[in-house]
Length: 400
Image (cartoon, rainbow, N blue to C red; front, side):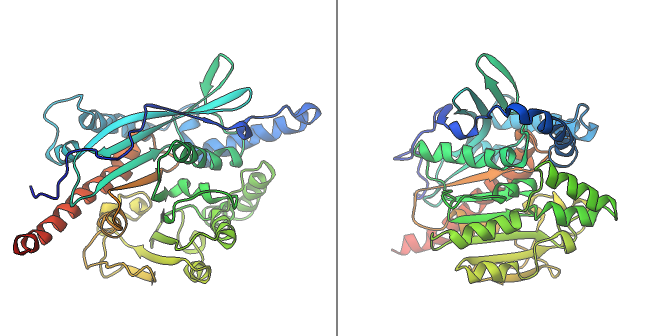
């Protein structure tokens, strides 16, 4: 291995196993006489949440989701070193990365939330660079009041959408500099109602992200059910519109330069065609001074229904790929996949020793399934792209 590989952690800050962050704004207030009105609406909202936002919150989880998590747990056990003789592709990740879980405690005045995130950190620098991923899942978190602890139950869209940003802020307030943010599917809800004071990373990547509940309901359901469901979502405060929310935020933000990567699937079951981002969305972003890379993919030969959730390693630049904007000036080669593109153009960009990426997973993802589906492709691409860069640079170093 070349001299560019660095084994020491140098000046990279260690992240503790528990992070505390005071957040009084998350405390739920007593509604008094309004409780009689809100109670039935919250019950309807809970039904919508469990069926459309968080399917793992149903009383009886669908069997395929249980199987997914069981199989993913075996992969995570390999990564954490609990088992021997891991598959070859996982040995690569175990060599270059450590994996552990971190608890983030958000304390309110009378209650608090505890989110468990998964942390992937470089053991070995590749081409002089280290990589860290903070993985957030909407599932398997807790809330507590005094001495009582139970499963986290977001009662409205605001509580759901703010949760990953609160965790992100907790890391930032504890001295962790986050360089990029990736939202996957429901994870895009984090952009729903952004405050102009939010400290988002300058690089945002939207991976087949939620556009708006109105668009999705009109695509998936016929009249009059689509209007009824949208009306119920609006009435119960579960009406998300991150597509517009991000534009509103950027129009008030003075952070420059900012870049956004939009990854779409041409036949995305949920978020394509009439339910996808507006055809001129990238132009609106560019009008706000944002550098944009926008591409839509057709992952062949996979069945169309899988195109929404398939790994970034399978979104490849083939003859069906549509590159709608590239003012970010990314170099995207034929047959290159998106995970490699992100590693090359985002994770290895700049001269910082460490790149930290905060990833928000989708609605049915646990930390285990999101590890396999969303994170492993990024880690593998980082290592392979870095080793390729080292090999390309090696002759030059000999000559010099």
